Length: 461
Image 1 (cartoon, rainbow, N blue to C red):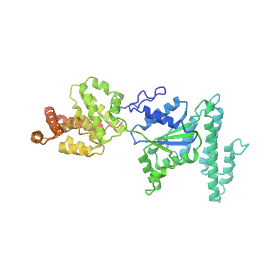
Image 2: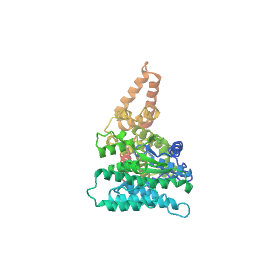
Image 3: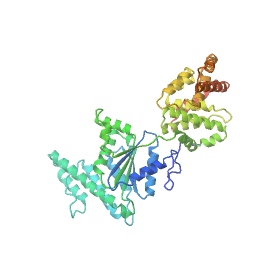
């Protein structure tokens, strides 16, 4: 039995077959933008917090663009930030998109080889040098650069301004060769725009992330070159401040590098949870249990993860912990679906409240008040699900005397002549729900289920 939640599969032929977050329309919209740059360079940032499905979105976008015959390059910046300069890894990723083969790719490969050689020389020497480039008759620009580097490397008294000019000339040489690579795409039966995906930029070392953006701006700014950055903009702003100091206007600074920003809309958590159940194999596990258990767990997991504003990755961790708990819970035991949903979420995001609830050290009405105070609650607890959660907490956390006082309060609401219909209906529901929970409240089950969830939370995948 696997306890690893499989990644969402994005196939080349049917990229939306497992589109659990309903991203198809958005992907096609963004693909249309990237594919219609009019020959101009473009840097587009896909902005969304960590763990919200950006990598899957980028994967789908890449597959759609490939179907439209675009040449794409995928670069995971986080996995490459062990190198000293991002240019090394970026050029390597670019080179993989232009493999040497028979037929029409030979010219592109030759230009790509020059791009690699120029980049290698610059990095090897640690400084760019000036050479006359873009001059008629020059066959191998990289050899001219290497010779110039050798002639000037020993000149320790080189003027600072002259050194800067040489750096600019070297960058220009790099761009010329890169542009030649890109212009060969139609000859390779590709669309004229090269799309370079950079994923997980916000997770890199701060200095690496900033250096990468500088490289994109100064080395890769050529016609028909489109970059798609997968970022958490707030995190990237924090990275910028870490490198350049807290006083920098990080959002304004980043605008130097990014032409367009696209904020990825928040997906339906319910749809994602249902899909995660299937991916985790929970559909099969629930097949031998009461169907209501599965539906109730999904229903109240959805409610609680929305209240807490949990990321998709955090939800996936909850699903794996649920699978662990189900594995050690006999099939003939009642799952107490609402309670288990609550405890799994609390253990993931609020250990202190988890402990207070499982030890019955907190007033249930205070718990509900706290839930309503959370920024993401947005009235989510005002309907029937909120009343069910409240009734369950009262049945679990109040003693018999306190439950009696609560019932008396609700009956008083019903008896008051000035009570409006909405409050009257809520009071009636509270009494009915409390009666339904009172006969099935946890007793010894609370500590047993809490203990299993606590153990599951300490298992790292």
